[in-house]
Every structure is written in structure tokens, then in C-alpha cells.
Length: 357
Image (tube, rainbow, N blue to C red):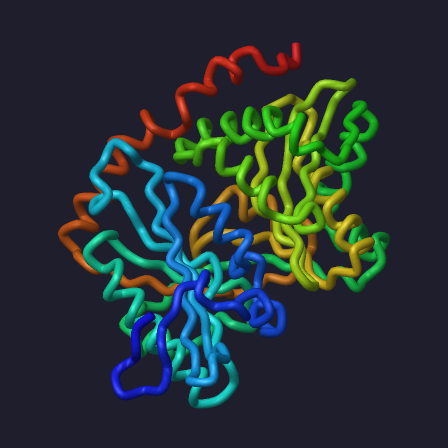
């Protein structure tokens, strides 16, 4: 616990804040990435180091919280040249001056704690509602336009289906004709399928993938009602997987991987299944969780755009602590990316996985 200057606020860790989850649940912008269970799942994974802080008033009530995670998936580089601090959801503050003061104090404390340990920090608001926040600019973060798509789940399934592009509807129908089915996965027995599909997709994209233990921790620590693992199969053989999260009224696309099979667009059917599941859960929003920087041609973003959701600018806010380290890190990432794009120990499983021929 530490005091904030002459302010009545004090900074506490999540574990020292009994009302943490209640605050997240009651806040209009509270997300699953703020919850204690998700923070603990990240903390149990060596590549992640969460910093979860609360700014509390003298009576112990919470005025604001912050959750940032130091991420280092490029083990080939020293942490100070490969780590970044990512806010998978923005800081939360109560209404009024005290909430403003709390968020400012939390951001200052965060920057003081991690500024010499990471290359940069990035705040990723979860929705357009929280996307524009002058407090981030006042704290030295630069704003960048970032696109997302959201589907209103208060419509009927037929209305949502008719709102999709002609191509996307045809993908889903063609999948059914060719024998693709979607089932709910079992986290105990289907994690190997999920991770094999993620490995294949991440390897193609040359993006580092977190170790599979992270998903074990997620499945072990999050209530089953907070996530949905789904497996797409063709004639009984797994070809794609997705992992969605749900919290309050929002369903989040979180992780997805697929094999490339001619004539099959398995992820289209997995998204369609998740949309219908979200409606059954009385959720209001299907959140595609990011579709790329404004102005860039981003293939996953194009894929997401064809489901007929609303295009929103959720922005991202970034603070670079050292331009020199940033330049070195960028160069090192470009060199190491093809080599360290996926965990080596799972490549044998990938090579023996489903063969569409």
C-alpha cells in the first residue's frame, strides 16, 4: 500500500482490495479482463506479469482500478527490449473528480513501476464508450485510431444472418453442405485441438504464441460460464477451434485457429455459432476484439467486417519510454519473428494433425 502525495487516496494491490470484483461488476465499463480470475490466470503464466492496482479512499471504498500486463513472448531478446505493458481493458474510475484523480494516480504509479522494464505501454479500450479519454493524453499517452466491429445481439438470428455479406452467408451454408459441424468443446479433452489450431494459424502469421499452460490456467480459474470453447469438425475430424469469453452483456472473440482446407471457411461457422450462443445467453454485443489500425489492410479485419457488425473506432493509447529501445526492439522482432513464431515443442503435434487429403 502506498499513499498518493497529499491525496486521501492510497494505492493497493488487487489481493489487498476485498471489493475488487464487485467494483468491476458494477462499473459500466468493467470487463472480464479486469476480473480477479482473469488476472490470476495471466499471473500463473510465465510470459505474463500482471500489475493490478486499486486507488482506495480512506473508508476503504474503491475509487478506481488499473490492470496492465507485462507481456514477453519473444524469449530471444532481453526483457527490456522485448516486453511491453498491455492494458487489455482501460483503467476504471468512479464518476466525478475523485475518479479522475484515481485514474491519474494509477497511471502515474504504473508508469513509475514499469517504465524502465518495458519498451512501451499500450491501453486498449474494450468499447467505443470508453475509447476517448483525455486522461490518457494528459498522462503522456498518444492516441491511435484502431478499428473494431460489434454486432447487436438484441436482433433475431435471422436478422443478423441477413445482415451478413452474401459471401459470408454462402460460406456458412457451404460449410454445412460439406459436412462441417460445430460442437462445444471440453477444456479437459479438447485443449490439444485448440492449441494445435492456434499453433498452425500463428505459425502462418509468424506471430509468437503463448504457451499452452496459459489456457490450462484460464480453464482452471475462470468459471465455466465465462467462456465457450468450440470445435469445428469435418466428418468427425477437428479442423478449427475458437475460444470466446462472456462477461455481463458482451461476448468477446478471444482466440481462434484453423487449418487451411479448400472449400471450407470453418471460422465463419464458429463465429455464427458464438453469435447464436450469445443471444441465448441474453448478451447484447458480440465483440470481435479488434480489426486493425485505421487505414491498414488487415486480413482478419476484412474477415470480421463481413458479418455485418457496426464499425467502431475503439482507439489505442501508447506511451514509448525509450525511442532507442523501441528501435532496437522493432529490429530484433523483425529478425526473430520467423524463428520464434510458435512453441517448438508442439510442432510435432501439428505435423501429425488432420490431413484434408
